[in-house]
Image (cartoon, rainbow, N blue to C red):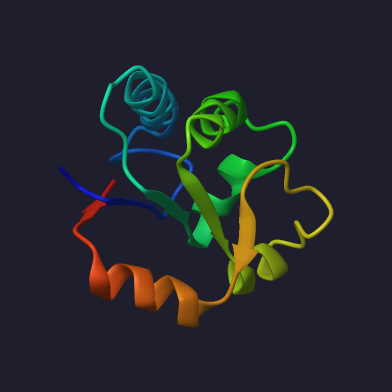
Length: 110
């Protein structure tokens, strides 16, 4: 069981973005239906947009957080996309905390 899920985009896979967006939404929805959950979901790069107001995946992330999954958004990424006032789920943390988590847990990158 992966303890950390690392999401670096608003889509899963390539090259079709519309399909990739659908796949990521399905992934997060189905993850929330599982009995065993990861300890963390880390969002970085454009993945932080999944935790912003108006995101199609926001409700899935909120449901996961309500079940105890810690959602962590990369501070540099949030600032880069000027989303500081639009984040609707999780916490915003720096790379030091993210690195500590990645180096001490099993990680699944999607």
